[in-house]
Image (tube, rainbow, N blue to C red; front, side):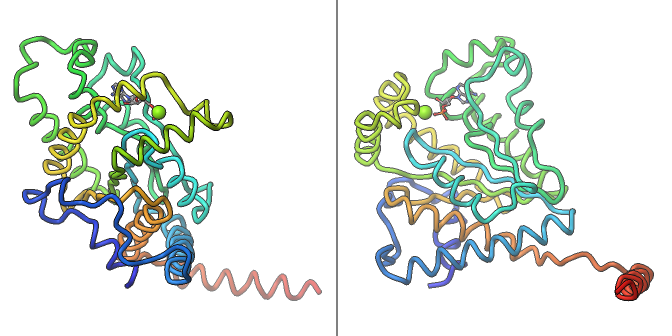
Length: 293
Ligand code: AMP
Ligand code: MG
């Protein structure tokens, strides 16, 4: 199995047929992290990622936006740490999206994301994103009230309208040279229970626990409905979703690395050609330095 096959396997190419229940959170494509097949693939993925990011940065034309969404304890932080090991920190930025501030709430829901987009040559990682505004806000309609949107604009179509706004936002990014890749780390409810318990049993992980986590966990089915609808409605060629099996951390890291490598290698990035005039100057500079000896 190749990295590109893994990427393709979990990309949602037929959104109207998408059902979350068809996706197994325990899938590993027959790979085993205890065996070299998976370890070699992971190492290969990171090596290729490093090479392609270097070109991205040097060429300074495309940018990459990686959106990570998931329930608590699904492994977003781990994926970021892992993928980052292959990325030069100079060319990358990570932005977490928490509960919006008053200032953020006084603007439209895409505003705060728009200010944090990666510039050309750079990789931006959103740890949560504007998708929270069709996920947590959909599950908690009271959050919508705090956004002070004029009442006559809060019709039953609000989610459809937001999906449309998101598609347009992402299309605009794509048309201007941003490669948008979106990942839903799909863990089972049972796996989340185990991981939250692990957090409670490990004092060094207590800082990750928030009292709200259990309340959100109770709303699991509502979240899954919201995720399903969001993924169905916003999987596009411009900005595909990947539904990543999340129960095995090593496998979710492999899938994300595979998808990013695959997408970036398809851009056929090249180091910029210095041009004849610059080459001449480079030759002269080399001769001058060599003559110093
Ligand atoms: P964490 O990522 O676990 O640090 O938690 C961040 C929290 O902020 C999560 O519970 C998110 O659901 C919440 N959050 C992020 N964006 C929004 C939003 N637009 N409206 C309300 N809550 C949000
Ligand atoms: Mg949390």
